[in-house]
Length: 409
Image (cartoon, rainbow, N blue to C red; front, top):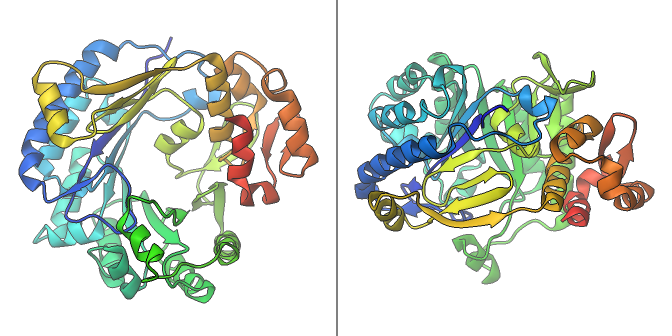
């Protein structure tokens, strides 16, 4: 059976925490970075020894068609030096050959520009290490909003970072944006879309703001210091993005993701055209509920029939690795029904939906055997549509996605 082909690496350091962030990230811990990188490399060696030959159970044609992937997420991976990234990639190579992988690094434009006297030299160095996909956290083009969010860049600096990445040879760049931001209007959002569409990026990820209780922004909203658009306005922003990206010839291939439509297409093996390139193979592995490994503080991995996550605290993580063991905080054993549910609600995020072949190959049962009555009910409500290929959200279902997903949990 084939071995696991996907790896997530968590880099939990930030210059400062953004006001909306609830991820496992830490500011003002720069003095821990060197020790953390060393611990991460040790964990990768332990992971290689334990799981290098770990097989994937029930591999689908869709999953097998993906490239191997390595994803540096955070936090702010672009805080690492080129030497530190090279050190990590050398350790990764024992798990996943880096010369054959999609390698993504999340980057904060403010960090790339602010930490380097020559930002292009840093970006060129990333390319030389084998990084072939860059994900820039732009979030907004409204400078006052960026300040409210705690971002360390301006709109002009975000564009400069994007252009620098293009100049040094990155051809696969994702731009992250958030809508439903404090004080944001539909007109402002549409104006932002008009501007960023002129940049010609390959890929966009657009997310509706989620107000997390542990994030500083939550207290600001609760205390009336800032106000958020209402649900109807946020829905209108999402619909505006769908229309404007379609008009610009981007394909909406996943609920929150768009890619340039003129690129070649990905086939899931049953003849149906699904995602265009350059879609993100790593995220698609999640949406197809593939097995994946994870390393770093708080990182979550999935090697069916188990899901695991690591110790969150940076110092605790480093200490656990130095003590000679994998820094796993918890292991959750999954039942077959958990695999069915996750394959369904993750796969429905893809606009092409869940193919019957993929579900049967991954889960060992048919869609109807697993969810026949639930599918019939959601089809009757106009939230799902079904054909001989598979099932997918309707336009109405896409607007009510979380309500649909709850039926499979």
